[in-house]
Image (cartoon, rainbow, N blue to C red; front, side, top):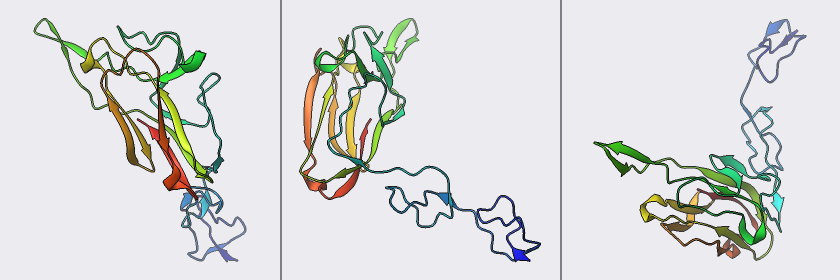
Length: 193
């Protein structure tokens, strides 16, 4: 009986006696309704991401929600950095997400010096279908008693930076709004880095 006799292949046939060269093993999302559907994938690897519908809201009170977190810290209370950050979340909430940028000091010849780093952290909300004229409304708290300690916050849509702030923005939560009108009728990925 001919078939695929490679037990690691997607189309392994345990009843095959003679390998017919038909084995294949490209993994990925095989569900055509998913945002990350891979037409070339032959084995589903469980990575499928499905569309989030609007309205969507997240305040981080119980978790990071559906965000993919790469390096941000979910916190309540102060950040622990000297002279930086909030003491609570925006609008009376307890929790927020942050990345500490004030701990990049080193001692050089007995003096403390600021060493900027290229560390990039991201918080990504994948696969949102923009079905109507919408806005991305978010809060940021970019405060430091020393301006060079504060990094840059970028907001990206589908990998393109559409909003950016750098440096000290004051010791308060700042609300910002980005129009998503030009994305109406399509899926987008939103990333904070």
